[in-house]
Image 1 (cartoon, rainbow, N blue to C red):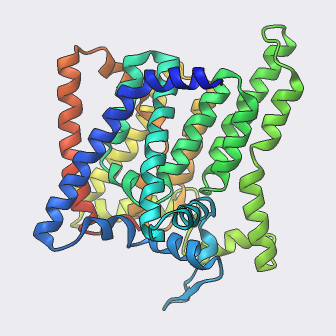
Image 2: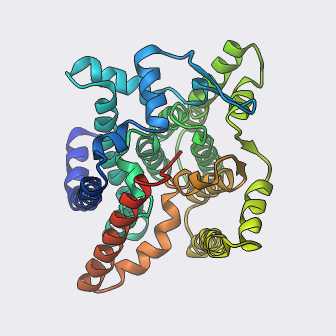
Image 3: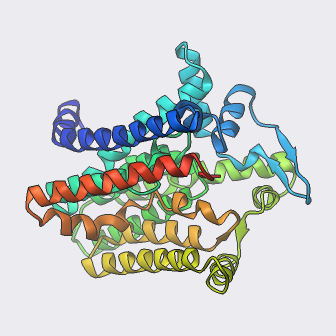
Length: 378
């Protein structure tokens, strides 16, 4: 994309970026006000707890920290992919900011880039109003406060959204490079690789039929680039631990892994059968909603690369064992799930659409403040 083309695209997306920034600002104000009553600073909640501490430590000291816990669990920082701490270190080096504050800056910028990419995907397929609605819904998700934390979700979603946009518009070098960077950000980078590979396969089929004139070498080069980030980090962890399955073993030390969803199903079942029945019912309803939205996306005719990406993100989240409270956060990058709702919202009159997004924003802001002042994301 030329400089003038990028500027034009940014002008088209300006409303979406303002919308995203406004929704996140409401969430941060709610968090700050709640903190005044609870005597907890918003800055600490966003950058000084849970995974953000691990990322900051990696940025400051590099890899090599291990925490031995009772019960045999071993928490190694090798579980965390490197792109976010690399960027935190870079921003802290180039500015007077601490590494923790640099993480907040990276997430803020990445959130805007994610909103831009999400708008671009939505507009490309379903029009400008749907793109705006998609950004608004994504920003106002109940766990949307994570987008403002020193976590990797915003960065990953930005890279994934733009890689998907490149796939949909036939920019194969960009699709592969962004997928590689996404693979350096989170384990679920494999979902972006799946989308690029499926899109590349479809492109080659169309070219063979004479429907496209894209050079096969260009498509294959993008497909070859896509997995390099994810494979590179997993291979590095394997070499560092002296085991081909080193990364899986590291995740196992955290109590994470994949069991086809058995542990999660058991978790829900125990709540449905006990005094926590309402919580179990809410969890079950949430899973059903996710599945229904995905099936609606299939019936909606979403492009296959989008469906492959979303399906992989959701599948990995729902079939993983570990801390079950993190599952909504793990599905945060699956923004195409919201496309059916965004299209429906775009068909409403502007006044009604604004009212819906405003109401969802307020609920999300209050829930986000409550969440971070409680258990919050692990």
